[in-house]
Length: 283
Image (cartoon, rainbow, N blue to C red; front, side, top):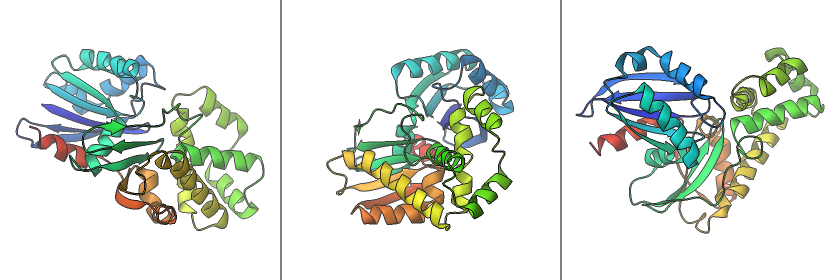
């Protein structure tokens, strides 16, 4: 059995194939980012999934693409967990950038590949190798244009009284914005980045409000400036995107791309479908 996994900060999509490439099952767990989760939490999330627990000894290959897997230390940390949980599997752990590449580009075709979901990332694929100009320092310092970026912006503007009253009242009616609740989730609970990203839904649902339009355009432009424009060939190759933020703000993103004389490529909400096609071709 072959397991293919696309793991974001919020959730992980799992698809199992047999040796002929036929799908056996599909399932989901919560995100498994090693940067923000302990070993115990990751083990619990695996064990609490019925399909994974039932089939863990049948798995012979595991292709895992995950947020937070950009360093060798984090990749080895996850591989050690998988070695115990899937005792008969050879595990391959790569950062989620590779999932985005396989889901949006063909082997041999160069392009810029961006992730805009709970977090954000950007790489240049020359058709064979991946190149990055910016090393991510995580959601606190980076992740421009991501779900947690917009969530952080909303919370700050709400408490600094910068959101227009009509929108601020609506925001307060839909979320628990008590300071103690926010601080509990940010500083005492796991996955603070995912918590921040939950607020991005509000700005997407209210994207036609003048305040929201301004925040969205500024956030997407900031992502382009700090990430995409780092590459010399930025205006010469397609710029591809995966992730919920790029998908639900695709119209706004297209305008920012055009404004910066860039070439818009593929936008996918989830890379898992493209990943499965890629691995089927290698069986």
